[in-house]
Length: 189
Image (cartoon, rainbow, N blue to C red; front, side):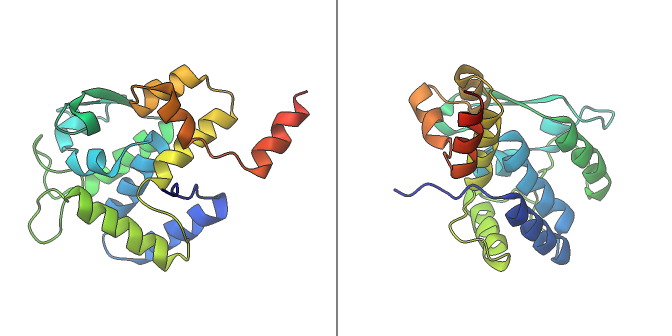
């Protein structure tokens, strides 16, 4: 099975431009960045609630604790949030129509219910298609997240924990080895 494309910086700029020009841009941008800046799966993003992300006073949590129903493999995991994603989430708080803990973070406009994981995957597919990014899927952000950290020298064990994988071999398959990464590696010799 072919791996999802890892987006380049120019791909990301095109995707964000498409999101910004479309309906529900604030919501869609948060969904996109949860995959690209936190390495989350579409299933995990779709399952998030306001209470998972925000404390009762509206501040953004530093980490998300996902329960076994929200994750793949029925195993709870912790997702760390970086500064950029926390800032985006702080801004997004003002767009939420409801702020009670059980309200979906990524909600459908018609019913204010959770997106299904499949609906979120379809949204990503439409956005990537409109941006002209071929080969990208809802998993592209997750692969890009892991690849970017690997290229910065983050240990495989840390990557495995951040990805929520049980086996190092699974994490290693996510790392996209490209010409730029190879050039940077030989310069270290």
